[in-house]
Length: 407
Image 1 (cartoon, rainbow, N blue to C red):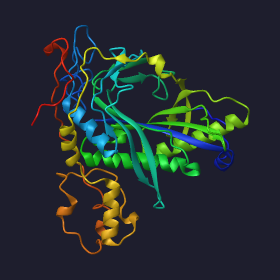
Image 2: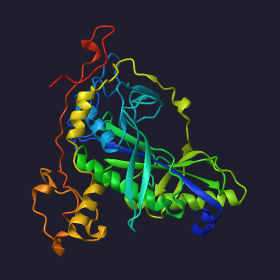
Image 3: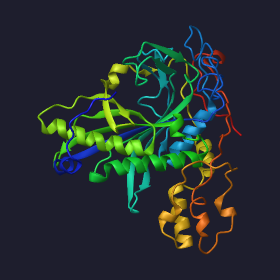
Image 4: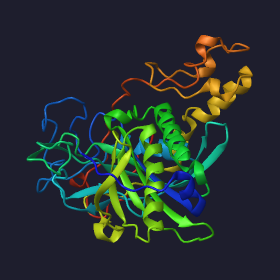
């Protein structure tokens, strides 16, 4: 059962404040094995049946980087118009929670594999809004907690919890935007459009099915308000693990109204995580949000840095598919139809992802085809491959950074 909160009307909130957003999207990659070990990532297995000493954090177990995970990260970075690092490394993000068996997450902090990019998104009226990308970095997922005995499925009110570590160690790419300013009253719409466009891009690349309802893609919505004319950002809240496009929009809108109500009543916004509730469209408090220093990041000592060669990066770039937005605009122009005819597809379609240009394009699309020919079809099960990079066990002290073998 969720509690109610006083809200300011949306119009009154925007009359006094400018919303500033930051979106963090986690994408689960479609690799055959986990990011740092050889355990399977297949869905639906018995709990705790796809684990090993490495992903369970046993003493003496050493990680090995999944090269397909690195390749997928570079694909995403390039598609987001990012710079690809010539040299980057992993870091340990330290925090303690039952679903993380190592008591740290292997992630990237100040040395991500991709940085300084952007993604253009199209709003419902055809206006294009550019979202700046801070970085895209590689990391691993946590295990899954099942809270039993409560009414909401959350830890509050539960009698006990069950842990499944099959998901622990599955490759993730986290894509972090720079602060999104200037969206005004359209901020929730921009958030929804960005996640929708990013999902289409991920599917077009073939690196993930990006099914939000299955947790393969989820969004953290950071939001703050500042009075009109002020440059300094307000205190932000972070609504965690929002798992549908509609919910991203609703979460942003609700937080704008909630923040405005708190500020107008003389209160103070607490920097915290919040849970989104689908039934009411509201959020409730989670925990006080940590700062970066609270995680005590330090370089991962068991993994060498990753140094993708420029030749490999350019080879990956040359194989990128047409961007979904560019494709929709091209089809709209070629067919002389409005962009709405070439709307986003809602689900991936089985396909070998052959080039759309290999099919003759009619002068004007038949009415029945307008809804399905618009987006590059994605496979229902992306090829799950794993190529391991050298581990510390096979290296001598002073070994150079890892880079893929020449082809």
